[in-house]
Image (cartoon, rainbow, N blue to C red; front, side, top):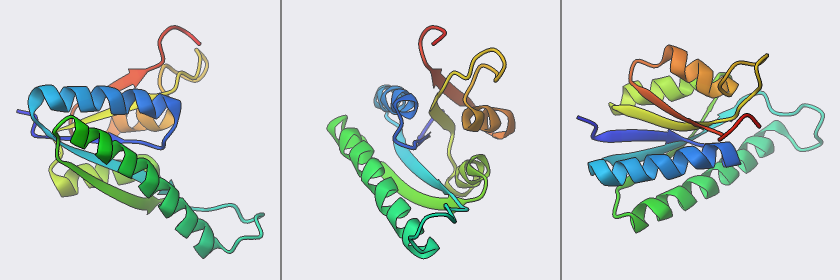
Length: 144
């Protein structure tokens, strides 16, 4: 039984498809939604902004994205928990979150990278290959 669905997002159009499908599925199943924004640590050393300020800005940006998802979840009558985390490996943080929170299913959007890059976006592909729970990926329609 699926009681907790994780919807990782970075705010991109590709991730948005995962958000929509994840919210729809959670509504049908009566599941609690968890949404996660992972800041890829490392920052941009060429920016004049100090690294700590870059992280603060990234956390603020991520929380805005998650607040939007939480608001939409509420419109569906769903409970939604949000988390902004940082990690040098986004897929590992997603998997850690799954274990820590007892997530039953991951629903995430994926970019199409063409035949040379595989069928899924790099983060989605890594999650799909490494997750201990089922992963539903929502990719772009067609071969764009």
